[in-house]
Length: 152
Length: 152
Length: 152
Length: 152
Image 1 (cartoon, rainbow over the protein chains, first blue to last red):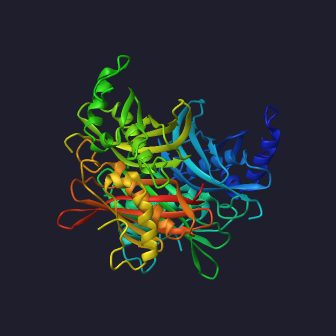
Image 2: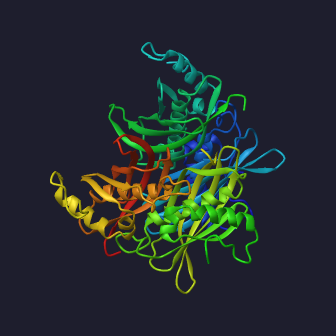
C-alpha cells in the first residue's frame, strides 16, 4: 500500500491524506520504511518493519527506531487536531523501553490526552507484533507538543 | 575515518575499540552514518551528518534522528564504565528539542552523572555544527540505563 | 476514616493494610493530609484535599503537591506487586501538568504498566474533583521504580 | 533570615525581591520551610531543611519534597528572565533520584538552558548538605516551562 493512498476503509480520508502526505516528505521515515495504519481525530497508528536499518548491536530493534516511530505517531495524532496550515513540533518526550524484540514489526499508536492552545500532550504505546500476529508491549511515551505556522 | 580505527590521538584506545566495535554492529547507526568522535571514561561523543535519511517533513534533522544519536551517546558513555562482558540497556530517556536545523551535522556528547550498581544516569547535550563550524544547542537528554550480561 | 482502617468494602484488606501502614509513616503525606482511597493489585488511588499547605503563589494546588501525590500513588501501585519485605524506590518520573485548580481535592490513580525483576513502570492519572463532585484532568505521570530490600 | 529580606550581598536585589515575594505567597513552600539562597539572571538556588514534614516511610527526605523543591527552583530561574507582569508555569518535568538522605538540608539550583518566547527549558541539580557541610548529589531535573500573563 502506497503511503499516500488511503485504504478503502479509511474513515477519515482527509485526515489520512494530510498525514500520509506529511509522512511521505520525511526522508527518515521513508528510509526506515514507516507505514501509516490509522488516522483518526486525536489518534494515529504507524508501523515499522524489522530490517537491518533499524537494529542495535544485538540485532534487536534499536531504541532510536522505537523512539522515532513513537515520536512521529504522537506528533501526527496532535496534527489531526490542528487547524490546516499549522504544523506540530515536539517540545519534548519521555520514553520507557519495556522489552526488546527482533523480527516482526513495531506498531505505535499515538493518542492526544489534552489539546491546548499552546501545548498538546499525547501518549504513545508501542507494541511489537511477531510473524504469528502476537503483540507484546514494547515501549511507552509521554510527549509534549506545540503548534507552529507551517511557514515557520 | 573507519569506525573501528582509533584516531591517532585517542587517549583511551581500549575504550575506543570497544565502543567502535559495538557501533559497527548497529545496523541503524551504520545506515544513518553515525561516527564516533570521542570515548573517555564516562563520556562519549558521536556525530551524525545531514542527509536525506535523517530529515523530517520540513527537511530539518528529524527528532527521531536526534533522539537516536543522543540515546546512543548516553548509552556508550555508560558502557565506558561497565565491566567487560556487560552490555548497557536504556531503561528510559527524556529529551527536549531546543531548535531545528538543516545541513551540517549533529554532535551528541553523553556524560555519566551517576554510575550505580543497578541504575546509571546520564545527560546528553546535542549541538548542531554548521558548515562554518559554528555550533548551536539542539537538544538535551536525561537518561536512565541499566547493565545486563551480554548474553541476556 | 483513619488511614490504617480499611473501608468495609476494601476488596484486598491485606494490601490495604500494607499500604496504609506505610503511608502513615510518611511525615510529608501526614502533614499534607494524603488519604488512601483504593489498594488493589497493581493499582492504588490517593486523595489530597485543598488546604493552605498545598498552594502555590496564585493559590492553586502547587505542582509540588501534585507531583508528590502522583509519585506516592505510582510507588504504592508498584508496592502492591512486590514481595513482602521489599520496599519500592522511585528511580525517576516525568509529569505533565494539564490544568491548574483551587479548592476541592486531587485524586491520583497509579497503575503498573510493567512489573519486572529490576524495573517497574507505572502511569499515574491525577484528577481534580470539585465540591460538586465533577472531575477534570489535572496531571499525567510516567514513572520508573525499582524494588529494594526493606533494610536497605 | 526572612524570606523577603535580601542578604546584604545579594547582587540582584530587584530579582531577589521578586522571587522572595512570590515564594512567600506559596503556602506549600512556607509550610515546608523553603528558603531562598540565590537569585541571579537565569539561576535560582533554594534550600529545604529536614523536618518531619518532608519525610517518607523510611524517614529520608520524601521524593515529593525533592521534586517540589526542584520544580520551584527551576520555575524561579525561568521567572528571573521573564518580563514583569508575567508568571511562569511548569509544563512538565522529569526528575531522577540519585540517592536518599536523612537530616541536613537539600539545596536545589535551577538554571535556564534555553529561554524562548513560548517555551523555556531549565535543569535543576539537587544536592544534600549534611551537618558538616559536605554535599552529595541527590537528584537531577529537566524541566519545560511557559510564561503566562499574571492575571491568567
